[in-house]
Image (cartoon, rainbow, N blue to C red; front, side, top):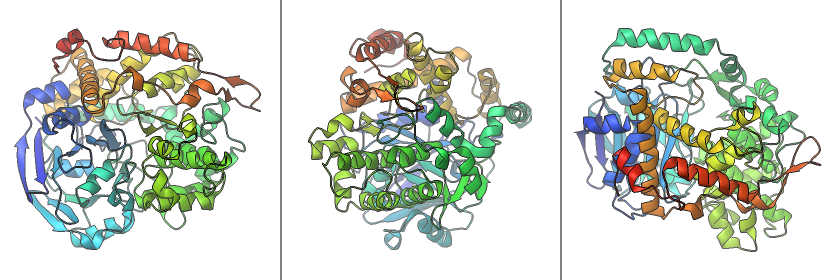
Length: 595
């Protein structure tokens, strides 16, 4: 069974291998689940996220690197410097299969190096090397420099200047967009600043071993059928052609696309940001390891190959008033090279632009100012000028600025919102408010169910149940680890787990594992950040300001707070939590958890 863990202690300048107990694998599966299990065991209570005692975890799942489609994804987990809560940030690419080929399912990074360093893993050879000469480099040049010093076959995880400067929106990037394959980014809630706080510039690895598979023949039979069915899906055909940008037009048309700091749900003119325009500017398509979807679209970001995704289009594009795909790609490139989350960065810049509109921050760029946007993004990465006020996220910036700016600081629990306005999709309103890492769309995505009429649009019936069950199922899926985009019958997972890792699970055990993971994270967040009902709410704008809807903004929709509270009450009841959002003892006992 897969369970080998490499521990690197930067303070002690040594490494060792441990085995994860089989019982933990059965209860937490891998990836996201093992992340909360291990972090809760290893982290002293109340540890500040940027202290050396915090732990940085790279976690694969039992399907990683196998023939299961989309098995290149993995998880970075730690205590977030942006939210003070647990964060599992997911990345694709080719780093994770290489980690398993090196012989490790989990990498644990502890302590803090006495000087800038990087880790080189070459199968069983582990080195901690000096990296002073790499400090200050942008992402792409760091990847190249580390490969020149190690191996051109190496896959490299690195931070940019934002991580070095301890921005709580700093990312960890895996390889680079100019590689012939899809690069990955652990983008949300500041994993890159935790890496920077450890004086760790990069982790490079190369693996030459085979990944142990219990029954390769039967696994391939199942996975080839999964791949065949995926390739017959019209939704996959669309993603292969235009990637996640396929969402731009329908989100704008239905009033869901955040624009001008979430002041309206559509963008005019939309044509410069459409999927057809992205396709026109696309240089090439790239895929993660063993992925039939090939959703990565590479554009020219001002001389740098730059992958463009829907969330970046929404937050750095329409939300900042930028309507040009080439200009947008340049802004994404700045974020990528600095090592910053494009979602949070776009939200921060939009907040500053609205402050400019209101006469609060005169030095901020105006909506639609692409050059000013890029300059501000760089200033944020280096904590320069106005960038120093904004660098710690919109929640902290609104506290520093005051003057009523908290009314339009668009975040939940400190994490800036992604590309779906919750006034126009009430399922996402509840999903954002109850997400285990703050304002996040990946824990339960209800948008399509609402637009297709499966859930009522602008209604509450069935929303709480849908959000709760999706969160549990996704917690399990993100522990396997597999991609959100892959269509598959859940029942095929159980034989795949048995053939891949000898892990026998029933449907009940699988979904209960997801529920266990979700509740364990809630307990951690209560312990570390005092999370309760008071925090399971949306930005004030979402309750107070009706959102103009397309085509001309004459019609407006609201999210009444009393209806939101009704959904939240039902959600707590379904979860087995009390009215303050605290798990009941009976719920924890049923899941094998305790305080």
